[in-house]
Length: 421
Image (cartoon, rainbow, N blue to C red; front, side, top):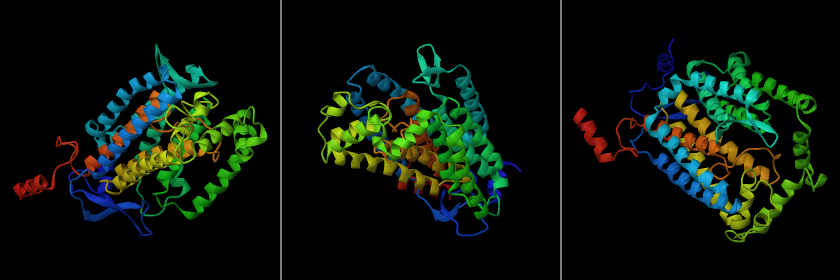
């Protein structure tokens, strides 16, 4: 049975139906928790506008903060140049690539990403002890960042084509587990445990919107604990173990393995409520703060803008994530809905891990702060995620081919309905 028929058979909307909202099902026989509701929505792109405004504000704040962290060096100007590609990705996925194309070519995209990851593992460019980049002349990019989007798309596709009238069991989810496992192994081999773990967490957050058999959940939880212990002794490198140990005791090795976390906390704490002022952060300007343009860039922002600035930053990210979940709620079908959840999860996981890391609440891993950390590939990937969210809302409201990027007014919508009548 084709995927289009599959959705129609489960009561989900087809591509020509009136846009409706998705609600959470309380029926025990539903495998997917997101099912169509009955409320008809007006064709207005409210949440896409919120996402766009928040994105512009975050990019502006991120660039000014990076200028301070990089002391106006070439790192800032390279990020500024990468912004053009990132905004292009936002526009392409928001206005040119329909959601159904992502559905149709999902596995082709996933396969292409896997090929790039294999190339990285075999012949990738090495920097900082990790082999994570493909370099073509002066241009370099990190395929593992795009792997995050591929995971979100594959999970959405799996539940779009594999609907069940009952909760999913481990046997049902085995093919999906193999797919996610392939991505995890290819990225872990670089080595990059942080990004590999993020891919698994993104899939897990999408699975939280799917009804899974309780016995299967118990088996996964116990197995995960056992594998964690096994991995600690046989797979993790010494520096990765030290990151976990320093989380439990930051003073264990304050001059070496614990130095980064301690200096980060000093910078954040010294910012107090209002901060020291732009370009006035001593931990940053005197270069006590390590990796201040990438992993610890939030520490630079907090030192200069204090608790008040950090609150504004948290609020903007919360608005984006909330908007993404509401877009998921009003999506046309299971694929679009779970994909919106996945894109919102990418932003949430990256933001939550990075800020928790610099606050000493999570082991230090190489997870960038969206729109702030230096890195062209990550910037493009985050903007593409927001573009996909915009595209999903435009598609769910039937505006994808109308030529009006921000929807239509109620008057024009009513007049069109009247003409059709």
